[in-house]
Image 1 (tube, rainbow, N blue to C red):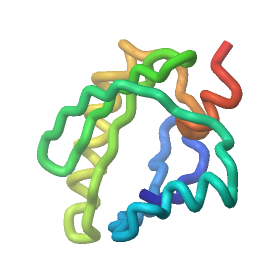
Image 2 (cartoon, rainbow, N blue to C red):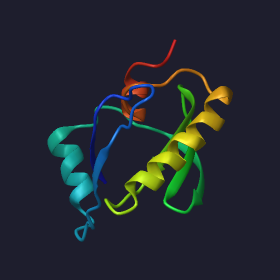
Image 3 (cartoon, rainbow, N blue to C red):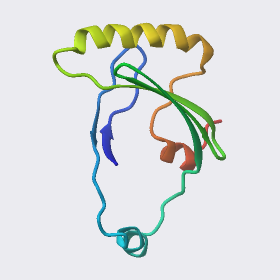
Length: 114
């Protein structure tokens, strides 16, 4: 999985561009480790729920804690309706969460939350 995503900002959409790549050669991981090394290892347990165009993830990241994420897959045709529903989910869920986290699980493993 490859994705590009900017920092999260409260009250704004945070689009991500995701590309899923099928790996045919099983030696690729060993090659990448030998060539690039390992920057960090993210060890997590994920709970996942899906509803319509939404995915809700609750990750329990080793040495970091629990991280919650809402993902929305939207087409241009459905964007307005989905965006409104996303904001409704966010409004209902935010009172149960802490502050918005910037960065990825990898960033959190490299520099844990205080």
